Image (spheres, rainbow, N blue to C red):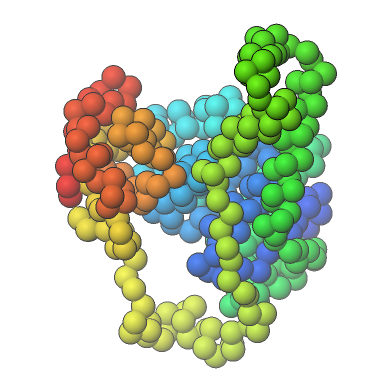
Length: 356
């Protein structure tokens, strides 16, 4: 090993030593469910999520947004101006979650990122170090969380060997853990407002209800139920059991290195170019604006949910192209969405929508 390489590895070891690192073993199809569970319990002030591809960043940002965790994508499809706008919103805490590729995150200089998520594990150990080094800066503590599939366990071991740091293999929060956390946070908020004593008008309303014959305890229970209504937009996804048996090396190498054929029954990914949805029960519609109009995933979800009066969480895949945007909506809402064409607006620009 030459001297520059030795210095680089030593710096890498110092970088990760100051960061809390955890890994979670999950099946590939359960990664999104795992990520949202972590978002429920982690004390996130700002987060940077790394995905493999540009398409992956956009889709993941969309999926998080419709599940109640607003996020924006940072990838090579953005113009320099759009990139700066996204970064400024992140720096100013207008958004607290960015989903990025490694290339798009180069030169990103923000000191107060509380969490880095490796949604996709990088191929190279040094890239892992660059990623996790985005948190824990300026003397602050940082947390790096990694989702690892069973066949990627060997790659995690290589990272540990490179950094000479152990990555803790942790258990994901259970459904009960998340429900308890939600209730605990609700009770904390209630305690704060009870101590403030700033509910004069609300107290008058409670008095009116009590005078109408309603039990005060029942009134309080209904009020708490209404306060928890947003939780319905964040269902806790079930997860499949993970096999801890790693893939045999020969089979792994053949597919990792591209020397073997893909399984014949492997479904081709939806790259957003198709005019039909691949998801059962969904209809693909086309919105008359795209990247050239500065359209973002949040814009699409917000304007459709508001004007068509449908839950934002029901909106499916969103593919923002140059001059149009493809969006999947449940079949039962398709006519309702189409009926409002001409009403949709993003930053004063009128948008039309039609079947793709």
